[in-house]
Image (cartoon, rainbow, N blue to C red; front, side):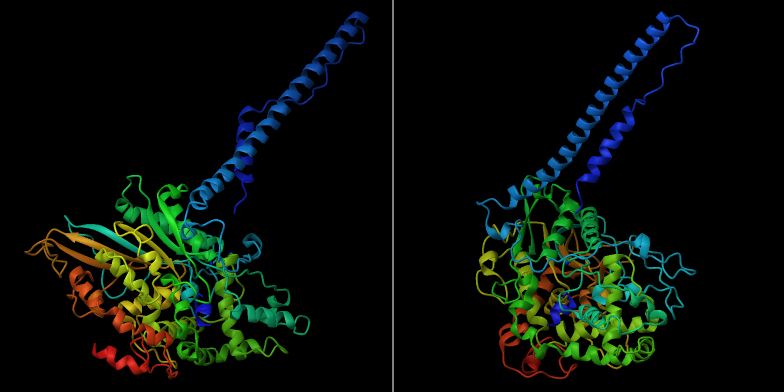
Length: 621
């Protein structure tokens, strides 16, 4: 299914214990080595000899006693510190379990034990100190520790970074180009009063059954039958070391770092009055862990004192409504009618990888190397890099072939999850309705798209009085949410035959750990649309604005919504934005898009994220 391929996510307590013991011993160490007693002159009297022998014996006993005492003290301290370290870990588990697994706590607030967590196989631990072939003779990019990204790439004449061309498999980086407007500081006197963050999970292993697993299985089946040559010779002893579905270590770091960053940016919005905010994620393992690492970064390890994590059940059968994984509740998003992007992407990679496939096939006689193998090898580069720190697959391809890879992902998302998909709007509209409900301070009490009305009809599980909202989701789901909002800036049809300039660049929109921050800004007077004016304010009353920030860059609202004033800062007056969004649910045509009987159409036929039969109606609206 396309959503699986597109997205489709501990340390021991010994080390701190041993470290503390070593520090303690270093500060109190005494010389307890046994020393030979001084030799007695042979001419000495027998009395002197006996006395010396007796004194030496007593000295030996004293030294032995002192050594024994020190030994047992050190042993006790080692045991005490180790036990203390264990208690800290156990206390952490007990504390969290006490906070989340009490029999009196509703199931949707429980994070342990995990339920409906999905597959959780882990992979081999990385060994970058051994596998990293650096230093390279030339440097194409300064590495992001701990990942090795200095791999020299043929055709990379501008020292660009291929690891930012991996689409949704890119390790997080802020959008380098922006979305067409500059970033501006708040005018003096204005303030941010509200935030709704939507965050993708961190870097993960490949999803079960995806292309890299197929590549690994084919390679294993041909073991001993193929003698790889040249650039592919590493495959002669290569083995598949990846797990499936769960976060890799750098994925933990991405979310923790994001939590720290968001605290620096928005920490003042947390009302530290003893009450907890509700944060939301899903029961899938990588989703739960992503939320927990983020909250640990934002609040610290005792985050359960500040927030309660609400987990919405995520299952592939769509039994439970879930706006954070809306495709499971939209049947047609998982059938051929929504696979236009996959088909177009396949056609494109057979074009841009033609030379690479011929080149690599000549190095693997007997393998029957195809364009699909080349494409899966590119994906292997991305997955091995975030999981193991380095991948020998990366320099098999030229820079232009990596640009082709990025474009293939863009086509796939456009056709499967965005405006060229018949379910593009429907999959994301439930979350849009939740954001609007929060902005309007209204519970959702009637069935609405894939909204879980049981949860969203209660203030205890869908609070309306928070100034901070943290939600965690998946890449394709976030793409559909942008579509359901109506961000036409990303609606351009991307041809499947050649690369064109575009705003929909998935590595800029949905890398691992992508984050969409929706801010409300309160100004004492209307803020002038031209921000280089000597005075930032015009005449009028206090005005509230809404501001969308995706991967640390502003999405200009006037580009997609002409009702919004064209502004240098990309903001829109909240009242205007709410009027625009009041028809979002109707435009999504949720029931028909997700459950209607309509035919698949060629990629590029659809341009508004709904089926063809209702597209004209939406365009008119």
